[in-house]
Structure formats: structure tokens, C-alpha cells
Length: 276
Figure 1 (cartoon, rainbow, N blue to C red):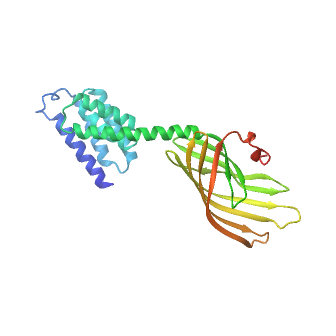
Figure 2: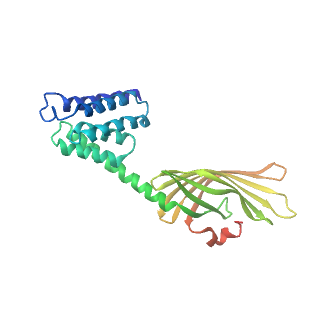
Figure 3: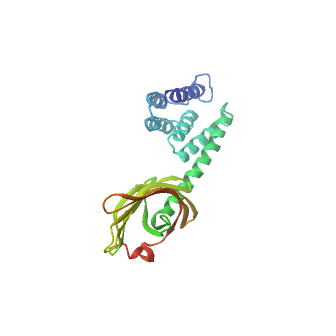
């Protein structure tokens, strides 16, 4: 972190010197003392930063410099660099492009254009991921085999800012008392079209006159979005089946297919009888 911070500080320092030294006739005398003050404050904030989140203070200072000297290229360069570091890609593009408009023949123009190309790619991926999150939101049914026995589970994806969560039951009672219980909120990891999450599922068998059996599945799901309404993937599991006295009568692990389909739970015959 210190090495990166020093590199950023040195880079910003060089560009500031280039653009405000008295020998630069384009900008000499054109920048107010107040604008220079905010540029210097921004530099100090960069030097004091210990994490990307700390760059926000520097960004505010450079934005003030832009407000006071809207045709001064230096703060635009600095804002482009910092906005890129904190993941504000559109703002970074705007600042870098403005910088090149003001100094199209800048010594670092080629490097800045390279940064713009890379940021455009990141922005495309972020936009695609956000679009997929919006399509994920809502009710889905999860169908697995759970060791050759078809099992359906209701799951609801919920958007939470830039992240997404899943709300679903983790216990399914089967037999004379069929129902889902123990609903939990589960964190979801998203890599554009790939969805991953871990959950411990339990199937409890409560047949009259039969020993209570419980199957516990520790599952890791990796799903790929096929269409916007269907996901298919795998569950890597470790499954334990217990007798009513707590002893394990089956222990198995492996990988099985899993399918997710979007739609109201109440319209799914496999789910609605168990959801009450």
C-alpha cells in the first residue's frame, strides 16, 4: 500500500509541476491562488491516504480546484486517476477526457489514452454486472437432485446496494408435516454472469411409524446465467444422513447439477404446497 501510495503521489506531483510552473506560458497567471490552495490540499490528502476510501478527501479538494479553475488540466488528471482507483469509472473517464481536450499534446497523452481504454472495459463489465443483478432480483425456484432425490427450494434474490443477497429456507420437513422452515439471508458472490453461494440445507423425514432421518447437505453452488430467467450449474456437497438417535447412517460427497428458474413461488407446484 505504501509503495502504491508513493507512486501515486510522485505521479501527481510531476503533473502538477508540469502545469503550474511559471515558465509554462499557457497556465502561468491563469490559475488563482485559491485554486492552487485546493490543489495543494488535495496533494496532502493523497499523501495521508492509507486506503482507496481515504482518497475521497483528496477528490473533494481537486473538485474545488476544478470549480475555481475549470480550464486547468492538472486537477482533471488527478481526478481521473483517483476516481479510477475508487471504482468511479464514469467520473474517471470524464476527467481524463477533459484533460486530453485541454492538453491534447501532453507528454503523457498516450498513457492517459491507454488508461481510458482500460477504464472503458471496466465500466462495461460493471454495467453488465449491474444489469444482471437487476434481472436476478425476485423469486426463483432451485431444483436439485440431492443424491438422486429431486428436491425443490424457494429462493428470493434481493438487491442491497451494489451487492445481492438470497433469502431462502434451509430446512425442508418431509412426510406427514411437509413444509419449509428456518429462513436465512445468504451472501451472494457475483462475477458478472457467475453466481456463487454456500448454504447448509437440511431435509428432515418425519414419517409416522418410521425413525426420524435427517439429511444435511453442505452445498457450494456455482451458477451461470443461461438466459435471463434460467441458471444452471453445479452444487459441490458433503451430505450426512442421521438416524433419530443422532448416529450417521450415510456420509457422501460429490458434485451434482442444479437448476434455477425465475418465477413466482405460488405458481410452482413443487413449492406452493410446502410454503405456508
